[in-house]
Image (tube, rainbow, N blue to C red; front, side, top):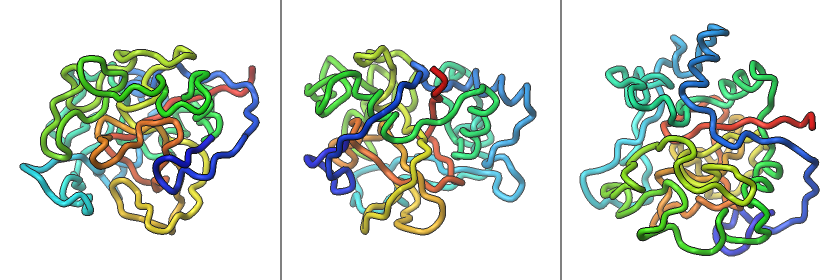
Length: 262
């Protein structure tokens, strides 16, 4: 696992033994998370009275320097999993999209309810590679651009001109892009995915929308999202990783679960 071809935090490459796991072929959807909330009464981190909000991608009107994430991210009061763009938004036409605005604690709660678990980074990366050992992408080496798209990633000039991946300019329904060699969908793009693996400090490597380099409970997220672009964040690759604070949630971060009882 890992890579020496792109970002420093992905190196070195290492050989890791992964025990057999069963992983969900699709990201957890809004419909599935809605069932969990209805059954359990669970209140997410972003809905709690001491927070009541989450981080939302807002984009920009034109070109901006790409060294300040605050220009395209904003804390939106009232944004949460069922109001993904703020209190005036809802899940209409989004029930089959991946649930977002979920902290690590929320993802764990769902996994426990479902009798499952969250993956560790080696488990996730092994599954994401789909049998293509050492390949750049989950599908091989072909760039994700033009008429043939393999994943929901940013198409155009980031962060102001997204031409959309097959019409999707935000999250897309799970499973609408080709599966990898193991039959797993959205292992690249659409939304980042939580893992249980702790982030080991790499100086200068920031959370994608908080700027944190150290401190707090940082976990590794994998897979990239619909906001990833070769101009800014070429991280829709199985080796790519990013840090994220366990208590934070965003509009481009979700999860899938695994079972180790197989």
